[in-house]
Image 1: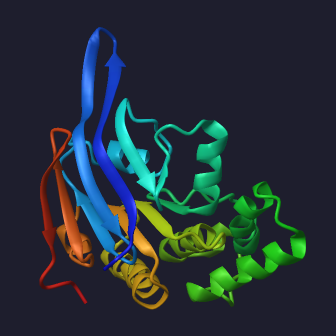
Image 2: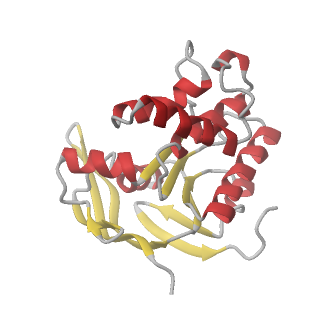
Length: 234
């Protein structure tokens, strides 16, 4: 039986926009298992980004329960959430968020510096992560010396550097051409297949979503469908 790494129970999120209440999540309940690769899809305003932010402990739910590896995170204070983000979760965003005047290696080291890792150890971790994404020969290159796909691979290496159990990727191919997007999805597939990292990605592209084993469709703040993928993209 697979281990449950994420367990969300009746999660809600309500925003105040002027005089209007926006119900971004309306009682979402789902489980994600260790080693799964999951795509979250849905139209604009469906709640998919709010769900991703909640799963990443970037946004506190209004109500409901959220467990990571059996730890209830929905009641943690900010420091507790920081520790979860630092040690359990790696983040990859649509915009690469790389420091422009800093080498690939230094960009990957950045979260390890904030985590207080000794210099020798973090250099070792950063180089290992860059090798995993096939950028071992680009460690001293700056972002403007790398293609868009290579910059996103640096961002993936940065997410990997702290050895997270889970990677959350928000539209990771959104700024890339189709060829680079396919290369990035190949990296995610390798991380999932060979290292067993649980990967959750938000995408609006059907061909990207079909790399996943399972697709969760959001609509109006609820899970409209939760389906296993029978013919995954290769």
